[in-house]
Length: 250
Image (cartoon, rainbow, N blue to C red; front, side, top):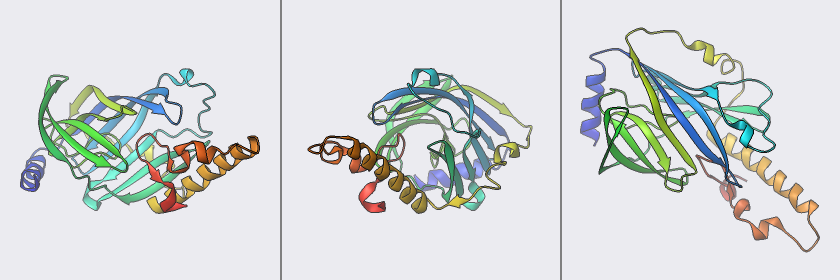
């Protein structure tokens, strides 16, 4: 796998291109599995940097009580492959947290399965990432090592990925390849001015907020009730993609 990955990187550098991939993003909001659907876009330039953004939102109306964050933010991740860094934008209540860390080193295993997506032959890969098991399909015909959100590191571009419980599904619905390199820094306007968290600090912030909400729920229940004893919410912060270990970060 490592030798194949190195050979693939050499191949990428032969021809500089920009790849734009639209993805259908479907998630079940936890803890009640409320569906939310969006269209996201991955813009990869020369496999050196990439932007993963919300292109257009679709079905928030089917989420009872959903309130969009106060300030608009299209960016979800910004990868700088040559610096091994990634910025991730996490919604937190009605605001956002901006997190900088190294690009996750996901331990992918290439499987025997194959699939055709948008006329691209794709190979199957599996991995575990921060509490969830994932299955992905990638194509070597689009010469990047990239994929939606934080997912990357395969010898090809990820066109579909989902967790085995189907809490999250991301599937390519359109692909555009161009030799024109456009400046996409409009997506970084908030990133340049906002406070940056490490992932560890963000996890602690999320757990603190999570436990505060649980405490408020507990206080509203009868004296003989305790949400922490009847729900596994106290054990894990129920994000759709990453599961934060409450005991580790509280």
